[in-house]
Amino acid sequence: WLISTMMIGVYLPLLMIISCYMSNGVGADPGPLQDFYVADQQSKVLVNGYACKDPTTVTVEDFSFAGLRKAGDTNNPVHTKVTPAFVQEFGGLNTLGIAMGRIDYAVGGLNPPHTHPRATEILFVLQGKLRVGFVDSNNTLFSKILEKGDVFVFPKALPHFQENVGHQHAVAIAAFNSQFP
Image (tube, rainbow, N blue to C red; front, side, top):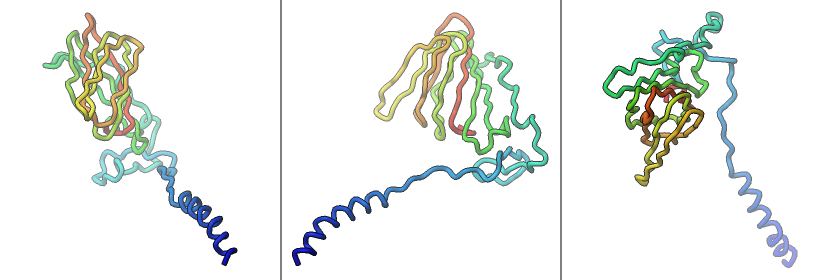
């Protein structure tokens, strides 16, 4: 009886520690089965993005997008133009979990409060001076003035905005961790 009580005293804590380690799960996205999944914009099937284009019809153009070269037209009520490079414009992004956009702001231009329910956004100011900010779930405003070269992150799904507070046109590049934020 003494041996079995002693064994329980030694082995029970050891078994508990081992069971704790074994109950922890590790998760990650599985590795892709193909090198790429260029979006087939014509398909009606939508599973984890767009259906995959036949790899034999994929060209280098599927991995390139020139839409961010030109300044957007800011002649509108908010004096701002967002030019997206999302999967709809750029099929090579399909299933990669990334996207970006160019934002042009006239003087006084505003990218009004909005959210991205599927993505975090990181903003890089190329030109000008922007007031940016977001509001957290405790209704706290986090706001800052950014200048050329500055970077700011907007956490996933939180309301955020940008406003040109400078005396010249402003330009920023936004990147997202979703193909369709």
